[in-house]
Image (tube, rainbow, N blue to C red; front, side):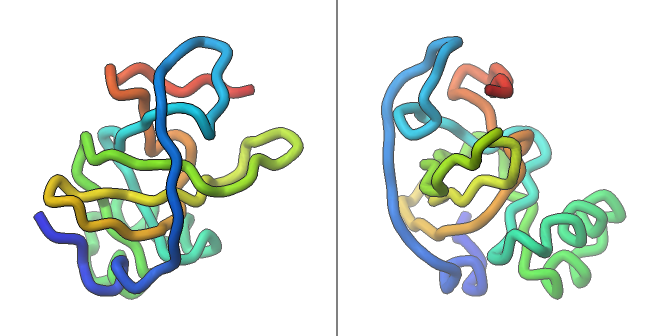
Length: 120
């Protein structure tokens, strides 16, 4: 599956690694979870989430967002905030290797084994 053109024209960067309870989100591998709403603009995440819940593809596209398939590899590129509870800026990679920089909530991602990412 190819990434939509509007997602491919978003932003840019990368990282990688393993998995542990005490983790550094810049040294971990993550994948998209069951309901991964990703947007080109972090301020549109609420609209994207509501559009995805309403199954309104036109609204989702208008918001500059996509509902990413489960299991796509992501790399975190946003610097952590003081509490690290805001949206993450990530590089997402389709199975054919195409990448795009987008924003998503922490809950949109999991460790590769499917386990949830703990709050700091």
